[in-house]
Image 1 (tube, rainbow, N blue to C red):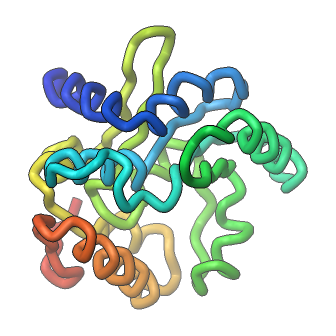
Image 2: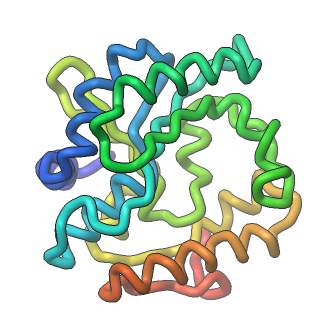
Length: 206
């Protein structure tokens, strides 16, 4: 079970990021099924605050993920993408809206290897490359809701650990998965030098 104190701490830190605050407050109006603000925009906000930096420093984009397996057409996804562009036009960097039910359709072209289809949005979050980024948040009414299948210890401890076992379960090219992780780490460590990086080969099984 997620630690309530950690959840409250995450909520407080995200409120320091006006972009994240705007997304969380406005996204419900898109009426996307099973959505979260997820991944790097969350972890990097925390890293910024813990480094004493502006909460938005180094964040290239924000990931808003949802799940709709009833319509895998790009048109359906693009409808949300276009609405989000208007809704989030005050956000300082792009907000990437993606239907996690159709990620497997475009992933090979973008990253060079195939993955198995996700079954839920939570299933997708469980497979993000680093444990600290396997986090999704949203407001349900006024209640802050967190999905963090591996907890938040790595996030608050500034630990970057590869999500190796989960990646192995869905990809058909583990070596390329390793490269993706290492590419991300090489960028992150230049911006957030206090990060404690666990190499791919030294990661424990989760």
